[in-house]
Amino acid sequence: MLKIENITVKVLDKTILEDFNLEIQPGEIHVLMGQNGAGKSTVSKVLLRDMHYEVVKGCITLNGKDLLKMNTTEVARDGLFLVNQNPVEIKGVSNAEMLRTALNDQGKKEQNILEFNRSLTTLCEKLEIPTSFIHRDINYNMSGGEKKKMELLHMWVLKPNFIILDEIDSGLDVDSLKLVAKSIQEYYESYKPSILIITHQKALLDIIKPEFVHVLGNKKIIQSGHYELALKIFNEGFSGASIIDKSDACE
Amino acid sequence: MNKIIVEQNKFYLSDEKVILSSFPSSFSLFVKGNVYCGIKDFCNKDVKIYLEENSHLTLEILIYVTNTKNAIKIYNSESSKLDFYYACVFCGENELMIENEMTTSNNKNQIVVRAVENDGTLIVKAVGSIEENTKNNEYVEDIKAITKNNHCIKIMPDLLVKTDSVLAVHNATIAPVDEEELFYLKGKGLEESNATSLIKEGFLKGIIENEELKEEF
Ligand SMILES: Nc1ncnc2c1ncn2[C@@H]1O[C@H](COP(=O)(O)OP(=O)(O)O)[C@@H](O)[C@H]1O
Ligand SMILES: [Mg+2]
Image (cartoon, rainbow over all chains, first blue to last red):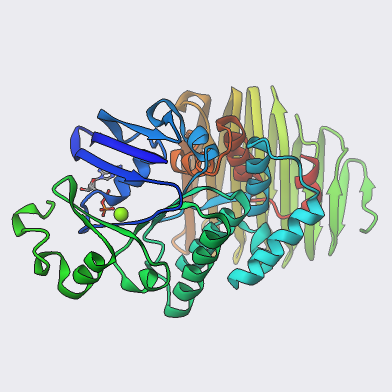
């Protein structure tokens, strides 16, 4: 379970979030919406303990532990997994190499290398990416869509119990988006993780139906509701739905 | 793999693919046709490389160096091409000297250096001179290093271009391990130390094609 209580977050002395609250129970699917620059990605970075984001107030508990006392590796090992908005490219480090090291570091028992490669091959086929990508450098020379699919491949291997999808739908064509959404849905049905979706688009939510919808504006959550709230925003926009005043819009 | 003809510290390579692992401290490579040469042990060496007309050499070196001085001097002939990849982890006090003198035309040389500091210093002297009355030459130096601070490495480029018909580029970057890459890997559950080693190793191996060199490293 994740509980964010009254946090205030600063980056380079600029306050991005103030008195921000959010609670997500195991197996729940939440959506976080909000205009560009509202601070959505900041939430994900804070949870993954990116030290550029300073939590100056409040507390966060993850599965009963004080998240603010954990480092990125520990948070990831506790099952938190972030699909980054812009996955970074790492030259010379292959996906297989990274995943094997990750599994080892998580203390999961050493896998037979052939079996491991076979399971990666199956995942590639399911995600419709060339199997050669397994041994390709992480995200190197890959299209936006391919990067997002590789992130999902990592997810299937690492089996997290809390997934944050930061605009996984941006830069995906219609077919890839469907495939990505279905893969997440399938993962959800298999492992029942908690999911926090950050998105601007309806298509993803048509497949992964969220129970809870939150709108971030003015540095905090200004409205929470259910799926209908998201639909209203998709139809009318934030200001049309009278959720965010012009005066609330982030600079 | 072909047999290499060796004669008084001279290696003659012609249209072949070789991995060299032991040779004298001072030697010459004569290159003809299309040659791939990987070098395993390259410490305190002084090598001269002669590229024949129309030849193309791909040279890869992936090594650990400790208190070593390496010197490489390259001589082009008309329309020759060199792709030189030098990747090293350095410890102690080290020096790498690369000299390239282009006196002919239509040459394309690319010198790529990747260095990772492991408690030590490295001085890279890259001297390129492109003589007058030559045409259509390309000379690219691309040097990158991962070090904990800027004092560990000194890159001294010296480009002497005496003609207008040339493309000469010098690029050098010195930086610690990339924070975003580190964050990404830790976010997948890797220990910081393992993430750091993967990034450093990848940084070096990323420029090397030969699997044998990479595996033995
Ligand atoms: N690393 C950073 N350095 C400086 N400013 C940042 C950084 N990360 C985010 N910000 C700023 O914080 C605000 C919120 O950014 P972000 O969380 O990325 O918004 P969103 O994801 O909702 O578009 C923006 O004004 C952005 O410029
Ligand atoms: Mg964002």
